[in-house]
Image 1 (cartoon, rainbow, N blue to C red):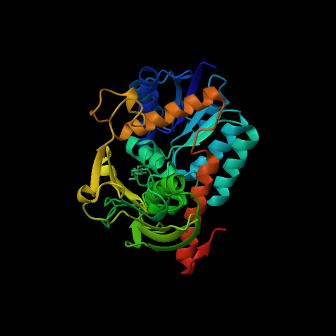
Image 2: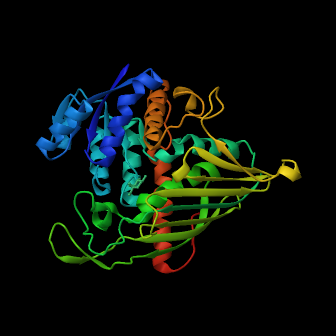
Length: 379
Ligand code: SOE
């Protein structure tokens, strides 16, 4: 196979971000397998035709079942609300297509497990778009911890803060607002934002063994777009949890869409015996590093601009010249490029559905712990 003919399901924010990624890979990464924007699928024919024209898709479908049935499609990319992921992934796997799925994998652990079983039984390539792993500074942080540069890890703390749902008159449900409806989203900030933090943490710091969670829904009722009437809100507007990692370190995670002043700030900090690291999405090229091994008179936090070439900084050799920055969308380009490279080599591309099932497990345990008001073991 030298081409991967992609069938995109969904034309929202993520449909655009993924389409943009596929369009850049061939010229920038020169992959052995090139993506082809073969067909895009969404219910509204006129809108989908316009989307296809804008992004360069060859064909338009309005029913995902017909998209999957096409024999000119090799991979299905799922960019629709979370409650639709499962049926599409199961059908795609049964049809022998590779499956790429937006995060979180599903609305529940049980659904995520069924999806995982399906892709593994079908033996199809799969991945979940937890894109932040592939920000060069985040990839460098993972590499530094894996190399033991921080020594024994004591603390891992992460937060993902936004403020776009503070207004009480924002409705729930439907286009762009389905994230406020638990029936479509599964959960609120936990699955939408903290899932990113959990994915990164599991990758960098290993498995989580115990969690204690706390959630809050600040606005209890919102008008539902489908009925026009007020309905109870059942997503978590904010979620905080503490945890223990298998390596003995302690974790603190926080997420909210009521953090006034924050549009999308994902941050993490890791403290080890020999040094510390911290990163912020608002300054995504910088990785702050404190090395306790430095001479005492100059010891302190340094700010690494992760943009150098010559193999020093992940992914950056593919881009412009040292010192010049890339952005949010590039993490998706990196992910798609890694997926194609792994496919060419017959290897899995992390995070796979199984990796994402691990994240889903933590999310479900955090919700259960919050509901029961107690610590939960994940042995
Ligand atoms: C929510 O506002 C959102 O778009 C998430 O769905 C994304 O996963 C996150 O990266 C940015 O915020």
